[in-house]
Image 1 (tube, one colour):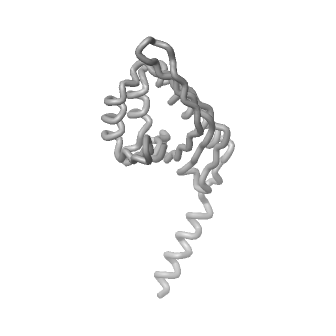
Image 2 (cartoon, helix red, strand yellow):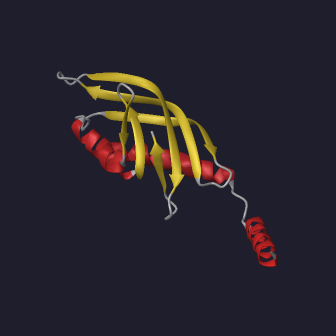
Image 3 (tube, one colour):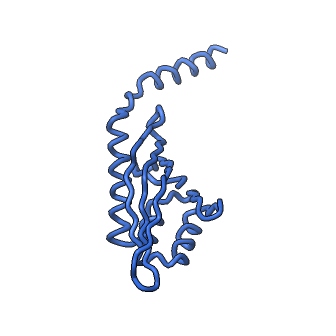
Length: 145
C-alpha cells in the first residue's frame, strides 16, 4: 500500500514538473507546417507532398465519402489521379492544439486548379480539415485530411 501511494505521488510530482505548452508557438509550428506542405506541392508535386506529410496510419476522405487508409495507400491513390499538372493552394483559417501539444487541427479554404484536355484550368474550391499529430522526431504529420 505504501509503495502504491509513493508511486502515485511520484507520478503526480513528475506530471506537475512538465513545462507548460506554449500554445502560440505550437499554433505557429502548425501554420508553418501547413505552408511548407503547400510549398512542397508546388516544388515536388502533389503526390510526393501528400506522401511526405502523411503519418503511417493517415486517412484521407475523397470522392463519394471514400476513405483511403494508410500512407502507402494515399501515395497510390494520388499516383492514379493524374495530378502532376494540378495546382493546389490553401491557408488555415483556424488552428487549435491539444492541451499536451501532441495533436492539432486546422481548417480553411482550398483551391485546386486542374488542367483539362485543352490545358485550361478547372477550379474546385472548398473547405479542408486536417488533423495533425506530433511525431517522435518532433515533426508534424497529418493523420486525417
